[in-house]
Image 1 (tube, one colour):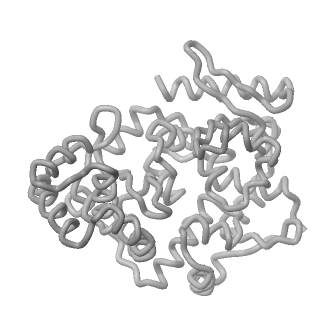
Image 2 (cartoon, helix red, strand yellow):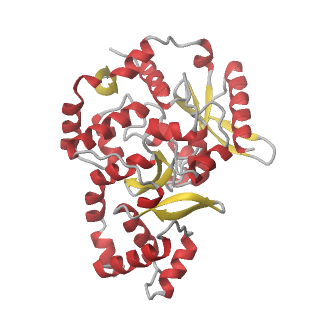
Length: 356
């Protein structure tokens, strides 16, 4: 039976926070398939920390070049995703997500004609390479008689993104501009329904494994039946391991890579400073493997849903950190070893270089 320590090492390798890193932020997006990014700055560091020295400017360059886009591919949460993968992901998730919002749309008095008029205004404004910020779009809709107050504007944008009309693309001020998905990301993979389910599971495990079926179903807001179909399609591309009587899925490629790459001392002593909302913690339904229940309140103070940046050592969340005026302030749950202190200093230097 595999130990928890072995499982966590496999996860660190899958996440590219140990072992080989990716060359660019866009490579990280392809590896992870989706990187949580409702907090733009945190999502940018989630991409940067998994590379060989990329900076925030490199993340912005990949966004401006269309090598990464931002949308709501699942769970109603903004993620950075590869542009070529967004459409087939939406093909898997959109039906369930839109159906789940029917009651909210009725509360907001949003119906098909409202979405249609909003769509027409956006197409007219953005066709031919146009881009628009959120505030400017709200003003445009209001000028065309489409009310945006009381979250109506947010739900209009969300619906148009879910149905594949728009995505968040090039940078604009401190965030991004909306663009037409067909113009901004014209190249797209075409997958049949069962192929798409299988690709979803394979790519999730490629950047997050080992993970349980429940983890995958939670991550995608999908179904157990869909996960079973995906497993059947993938066949020998996946393998399993048992930890504490629980079955975890992982790619055969990850299992082979870990077997051929024994853990080094520097990896054992490594400390990672991961951003708020990082996939390493939020990419799973079951989180007690990496975070003790007694410390959860320190990660999400007051249970308000706002996750703090986390300190990770040996695959476990061992503290929080924040950027001070001149230094990075680390609050560990227990004293770090001398080697971990030095590793944390190096991780802090990596973050400062990234942020510039």
